[in-house]
Every structure is written in C-alpha cells, then in structure tokens.
Length: 230
Image (cartoon, rainbow, N blue to C red; front, side):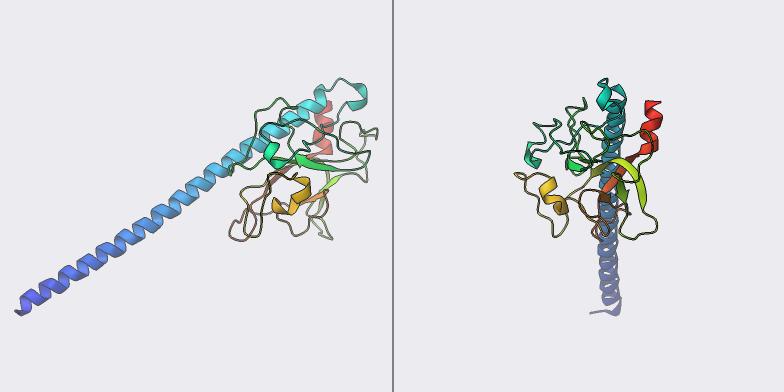
C-alpha cells in the first residue's frame, strides 16, 4: 500500500478517535449539567415547601383564639408515612414538656399536601412547651423544653428553637422507609445526623448526597414566635 494511503488511513482513524472522545466528553458534561439542574429544582421545591410550612405554623400560632393555646403550634400528624396524602391532620402528642415528632399536619394548617423535591413528606417537630394543649409559659425564653441544632457537646449548638421542619429528601444508602410505619418510629430512615438524638436535636449541614446527607432543615425560634405574636 502506498505510504500516502497508509498516512491517510491513520489520519482518518485519529480523527474518528478524537470525535469519539469529544462526544464522550460532551455526553459526560451534559449528564452532569442535567444532574445539577435536577438537584437545583429539587432544592427549590424543598425550600418553597419549608418556607410555606413555616409561614403557616406562625400564622396558626398567632390566629389561635383559644386563650390557653395562644402562641401554640399544632401537634404533628402521627399517622403512617403512607397515609400522609390522605391525612395531614394534627394528632395527639403527649403532655407538657414532651417534644413531638411526626409528619407536617398540612391539612390542619390549611396548606396543600406539601412534599420536598424528592417527593418525600415534610417532617415536623415541636417543643413540648409550645405545642397545643401545653400549659407551660412561653412568655420568656425558657431554659428547657427547646429544640436544638447540632448539639452533643458541640460548641456551636443553637438552643432556642420551638419548632423544626425537615425536608428529608430521597432515602440514601442504608435507609429503608416503610410506608406502613409512622415517621417517629423510623426516624433514622429519614434523617441523617452526627449529633442528633431523640426527638429534640437536629443537624444543619451542607447538602452532600454522595457523603450521606441530604436533609434540609429550618426552624422557628422563640424570638420569631414572640415577634409574630406582638
């Protein structure tokens, strides 16, 4: 075969290989962009759901005209995870000083059925002092019965939250969510935490799905509640 023909074939092969590499690179970049775009939409939907729930909870506390419950928040929906769509009603949540954890009582709050960007139900915790039915004073910031962010000997722990809302995101490796069980009875299947314990401590961390954390958490502080009441 003439040298010029062999050279032409090698050149064509190199061009073909370069085209394949370029296409592979473009495909990778497009996939990464699509994943990022999807996650942005998920984050936005979760943020909107949490903001709407927080606003509704504060409005509920302010509008409650039963004197004994003025400034109190509703108890969580204590039904099963699978019953969230047809539920959304505030349930029973124990006595004074006992924090309650469960699903957002969206129907009681007059909201639509809120879910986060991964279609997971919104979770909700309320301090035992600030829930409906409590007779404990809420006039001044108490030294107990508050919810905590990042506790367990953590110097940056924040201790003045009266209610917390969580968008748990999709289940991660090691988590298995049972729709027939309440959220309170499978807390670890929804929440990832280093410091959190029981139903009174929650973690705020950077969203890192690959690293095993995808919870989005916001809270209502005692000061925010008092400001709304005033």
